[in-house]
Length: 124
Image (spheres, rainbow, N blue to C red):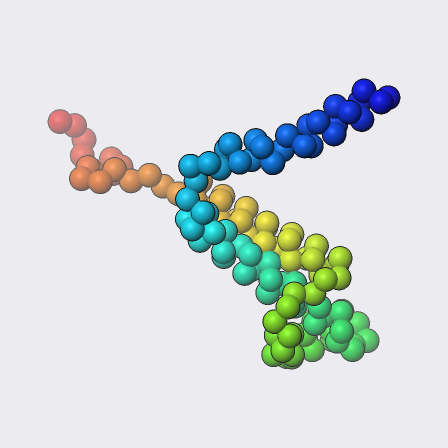
């Protein structure tokens, strides 16, 4: 059992080294610009989750309406909520936004520039 714990400890201590090796030639500014929309999306949903928790309402529908009506209150404090539920909502929504963008990008049509696309011509 002690050998397993040592192996896990060695693997975890090697993670920062391998990350440094993999990101050695990466442009930090470019990476931050690629991640910014997802972080902003997660931040906004974190704030909306906080506002939803603090709104008074008898049922889900009323709370959702009060949340949409009072969005300005959520951004009075610029810091994100540190409640675990709010953090989870922010992370999941940011990741969901990333997956949507990734799927849209992956399924984009690849047009051939300078050539006809489709069957407009019957033969050469």
